[in-house]
Image (cartoon, rainbow over all chains, first blue to last red; front, top):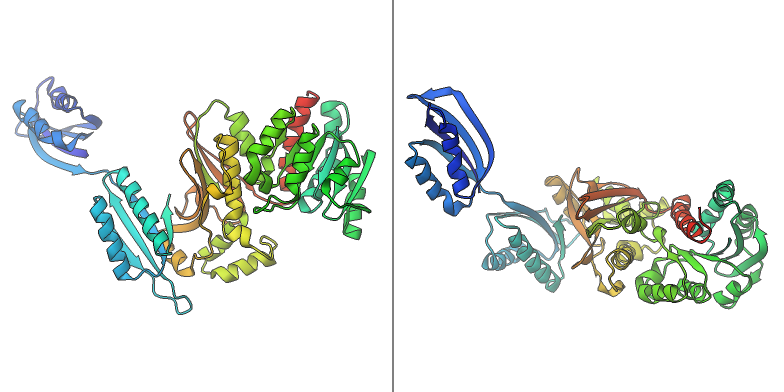
Length: 163
Length: 333
């Protein structure tokens, strides 16, 4: 996960390093450091940090900062997600899509799913739907791809996936 | 060096024209001329051991519909009629049987002649047999124009990217499908876009090979065998064509800022031709009849090449590059 942290450190030499060092101790990867000298509260200087860290080690990091008398003012995290779009063309009504998504959910975890349907064409009996998914891990997309490929083949549905 | 041209349609005529135009180039580079000593179309052939005039061959074909006056019962009969060094094989592609090209290529290689071909059928169906035959007879076979027309890809991967590990290649390998899908981007239904492609001369009267993805699949097989060292055939490719792509699907893709393109993909584990959703602005969202390929390598990263995938002189340019490579090897620069 990617974390944005706003810390306040004592205005003393070595305090900036002291705020960064714990990130290394939990095997984090520092992406950005801003020493914000304009923002001083109660004799403490603001430091903004952006870093990647295993979400399981975040509590450990907080404890390390607190042990160094560093105040955590704000902590926000962003998960990197992998997204993919799929268009299905054929006999794909809402019930079919719902069943398909249930099978996908049984096999893997999705962070987000959106389904759009086209207005049914008068000339064309086929329905079209677009499924957008977001997953935490790239492997999850491979699992979704395998399920959709198999199910669409079985139902004679044309399956168009992203790149 | 003496050349026999098998197949005198658009491509055969194109390379004939190119050889005529490049006479001074050949003389300068090799100190000798390159002569056409034989040519055949589907019904007739003509030979001339002292060289045939390219312009006269083209005129004869234009005026009479035939390149020669003599008819033949089998292609080998025409090939036996004169001695030659290099066969340029440009007969029509037949993805089911390999067509005449299989016979002419096998005849040439088994008689110690080098071959340049743009015919996808023999390469997609009998790649291993053909390359083994070339090796046994110490012949060179080159086929740059069989994938992507004027777009360099096979020799680029084999020569210029030698030493790199090619991880995958994916791209647009059929200009006809890309033309149709580009027209559908603007709201035209599939049937109308296909008809327009036929009227513009981009699609044949029977467009099956293009729109069902068979033409792209042949190219995927050729790339898999020549660059990835596989022993694949046409049947190994997972193929989905574009016939079921509806205007609704294209419109739905558009709402997400995407277009649909027929993409061929080759990697160590995948041989596939399928319509794919491509974000607008992505190199593979290219509109029109151009071909494009994204080559993913271990050291150089992604490399993009693009060019005209078909056409008389465009394909002749690929044949010419193969011809020059063979002449460099046989004569020396």
